[in-house]
Image (cartoon, rainbow, N blue to C red; front, top):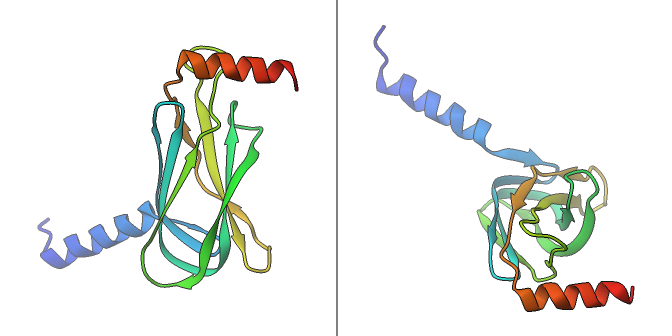
Length: 141
């Protein structure tokens, strides 16, 4: 069976739509984390936003117990690509090779239908001084 250019175009279009994720009031086309020295930088993009108040950033050490670590405002309504960036500077670890898991909670303007994104896992490099300071602070909590 021979496929024409039209069949190929339709197939590419279908694959594109299945590769994006629609989360409540936002179509997220990319969500990734990059390890840094004593920090993790999260990047995500939306293809469009409808009734989107913003994005709650959450972190977990075990992929189940997530805690809010930040919030970035959405555009409300947008039909163009928007790029977002959040830097988590509160990473320090109690043991070697700690992996942090992140997800986004899309919040609508009326606070309804909040949906979670996929989970992104990142292992940052932590300096010995930061590790020690984190341990000292933990003693006084």
